[in-house]
Image (cartoon, rainbow, N blue to C red; front, side, top):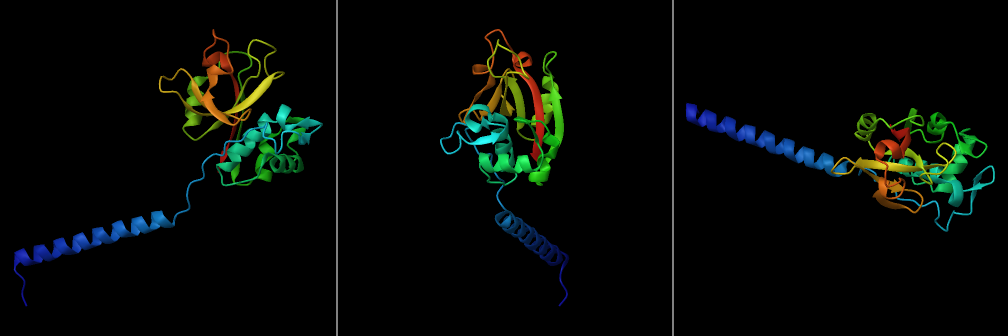
Length: 211
């Protein structure tokens, strides 16, 4: 049977529509089969389950474990579910500690291979580079070093670690997840003097994220 030009065009249109439907169905099935993207666990160093656990050199998680708990929270983004005491044990075995200080961040991937370390950035001598911080946040949450007691002895002596997740809508503050109590809040509300801006309040970054 010979098809007219109109019939041939109609057939081509039907075939194209069938192909597009097939592609859409395949994409839907692929999305349904893909594993869900892990979300960051909110953890508190003062959780009764581990606050009194010694993680290194006589230091307890509840008193000094903010950095360890921050690492645990970042590790959860890669699908790990280890609680802070187990994280501390693995970091000790990987040689990350010097005394009670988590000094060798670059060794964390030995304990957690699905994480990569991008290094340490310190701004102890001046204002934080907020352009750099914004660029890092485009790749995911960032561990920050801040002043544990603003206006007192400055970091690194009196440092606290928390996790920046994003800038606030006005760009003047940071939305953080704080391992001190496992809550989300704005950085300047807790770790700054009233006269400080972000450049004063952020003392450094620890670049650890899923591979």
